[in-house]
Image (cartoon, rainbow, N blue to C red):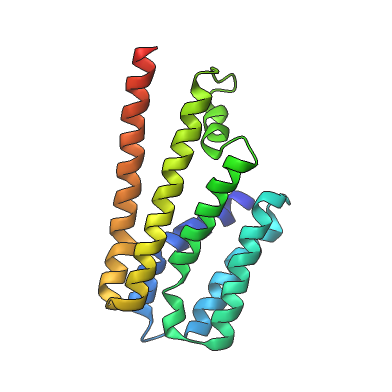
Length: 181
């Protein structure tokens, strides 16, 4: 059940910019808040309690409460900024309270990660931190000053293309680094 809720939350997050763009004239921000809040609450109730992720759920739920209370269409556009901020916090905290997130992910696939890979995973985690910082800043600027269509294009398409590009470049670099070893 937890995976299903997580998958639904992921899909809702991916479709969120388009839901805002096409739904803003038909649904109130309060309705968006109720749906989004229900998904985050379902995630919290169906997943195993982990202190590392409970603060993310709490932040998302606070956002949903604020969105419901203020019922402001402008507030709807801040959700992707929040998500980038949460990922930035998650990745950067893992650098302080190790192991780095990319190392943890690498160990899922290769439990006995070679010692030489550890510094590399730390560097990749830093790159993702820079990405999420930049993405959050661009999204915040679009939220404040750009038309809804630009915001939708960036948050619903361009940001994901940039993430895929970063994944691809990192994979390519990793293959080169492995080839040198």
